[in-house]
Length: 113
Image (cartoon, rainbow, N blue to C red; front, top):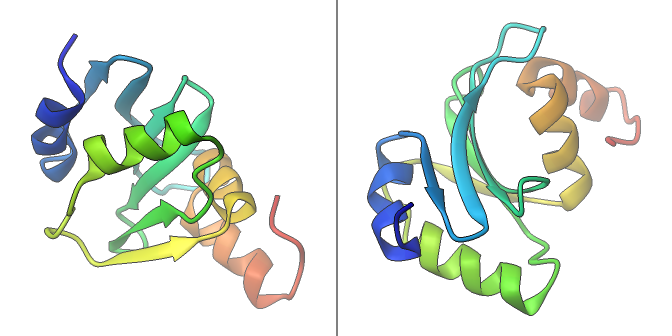
C-alpha cells in the first residue's frame, strides 16, 4: 500500500495502485474502450482516463469531505492529460460501459446513468 501523495505518480503514469481507501486500475468494458479508473472506497469513480476519448474525466462531485480530500491528494494537478470535469452520472456510466456508449447516450440526449 502506498500513500495518497505517492499515488499521484501512479495516476500520471496510468499504473495500478492501492492506497488508503483509494485505488487505480485498468478496466476494459465490452464496448472496446480501455479505461484507467481511480476509485474511492472501491465503488466511487473520481477520475477516469479513456483511451477511446483520448482524455481524462474528473468527477465534479466530491461526494463527501473525505472523498474530496482523497481527490486533492491523489489527483493533485494531473497536468499530463487533457481533463474534463463531468457529473457523477456520466462518471458512473463511463466506468461501466466505456466512452463510445456513454458519449452515444449523451449525443442522443438520453440520461446517462
